[in-house]
Image 1 (tube, rainbow, N blue to C red):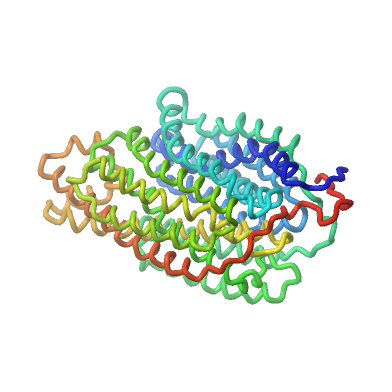
Image 2: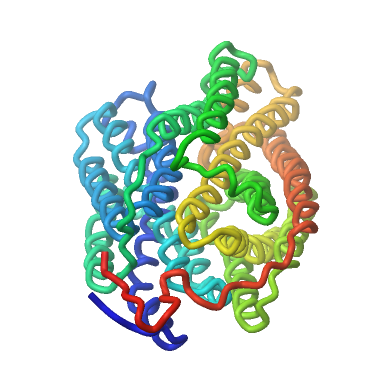
Length: 516
């Protein structure tokens, strides 16, 4: 039991003591999304079960998406520290078992277990920072999280390729264990959060319905245009199930005493706006991240490794803008125009990337990526900060998890819909080739490497390169629509003064904080 009076210096010491552990957890959560993809061809060759290939990713995404809102709400109800530690332990157990998997079925099951823990990692970090740091001062720490994101997005494929080529693909999973153990020790030793001692009623029906809706949406966006046609009974059935489930969920939440997702949050103008902005921003952002490497490899003939490094301009732009924006907000307390400015700059970057062609140089592509990265940096962290500042301390976790949930669903929709646009444009661009050749290239286009491209006849290679460039530019052209919507929504953000006191800090000097 610790009695203390919070001062800015004491608050800063508290967050800096636990920050390395939180950043390490954030790195684990983001690294797992990038490191495994590089190893998947080798995993399939080793374990077999090519027909179940897609489920390795799908099981993880479904489990993590379902649990993200649950961790946020349960953390608000019962205290964050224990739940956060539980999420880390589940994630590490799933990681170790995934590395030990002997067939594809085991890997799918263990990846789902890993996803059940992963749902609590990012939301736990965001909510804990929200507890420990006053909204006015959160911008000071944005640069750290932006740096972690850049490290994960660029370093993940590189590390995954190194493990796969020189050690074993299993280390793509095993690497989480020592890193997670270090983070766990830091958090156990340094994290002190208030304990909630009020009794609560768990919204079991709301949890079940939200899980069903999230599952249907993730499966719809994962399978549409790949496993099944957009107009297939399976995809239509998932869309209908998601719609009916959403209606039932909204009805249940209006009657629950402790709703898993309090609908009154959306009565707050800023919260609703940043949830929608996050959805549209992720829609465009994930399209960029997925399709830029294809352009770099298949049109500009970069290797898989160097295409990862060529994304550095995007990450540098994002880090620099995030750090500058954070410092300005901490200094002035003003943030209203950042969502608008970030979405507008992102739209400019999308417009520039919509002009790329086979003749676009790597230098110009890098400059366009810097613009896109600056927009992302001005927007991403600030959207979460506004969401947290829009609610009271008791809803900090659910505000963080709901914001993340909308971003996750937006990213899933973006990858799926942009993937369909990319494939359709690619097929159109290959229409001059024999039907069987065009069909084979269109089906394998997103998985073709620079080495595979070199084996094509010169006519097919030239046409394929032009078709990929046109398809990538078309994707970014459509991306302008979604970042443009985010820009318009950014105009309606209201300035609500940022709280200067951390939610976990006591109102009165004598108030006690109890370590959870």
